[in-house]
Image (cartoon, rainbow, N blue to C red; front, top):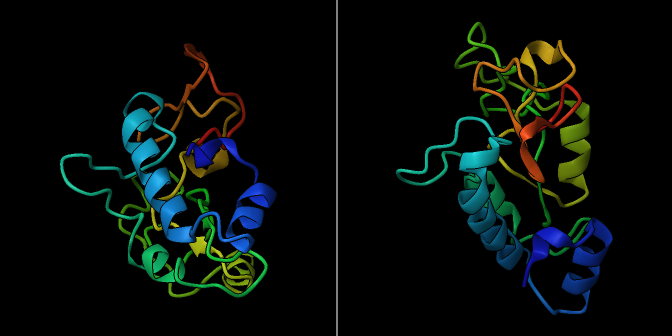
Length: 157
């Protein structure tokens, strides 16, 4: 099944009806990222020679969650939202290796709701200064419908 085509509400409904599990959604997402992200570059710090360095342990352990409104659904966050112990570099070389000692409020609330926060972050313009996601230390994000077009917005990942 192509879980990436479903809305969050549809994913939660499928989990509630036991038509899928959050683990199956995570596995499907990982496969989709490996297929298309080398062209799109929506995620940062990806290494497809081995495993992505961060669909990660916290997401894998969170997919066993069956409580909370989000039921372990995997969630990606942009590279300027602090996630405890996870590289958060604002797509800038200046912050390379920064791992915040705390979760941003939004991350804490997502975790409290049962979300599986992916350790790999989404691409954006460096420090969110820009309007096309072309000015990232990790390179530009490409429009998935037309690779010759920009994605638009500073949070194009």
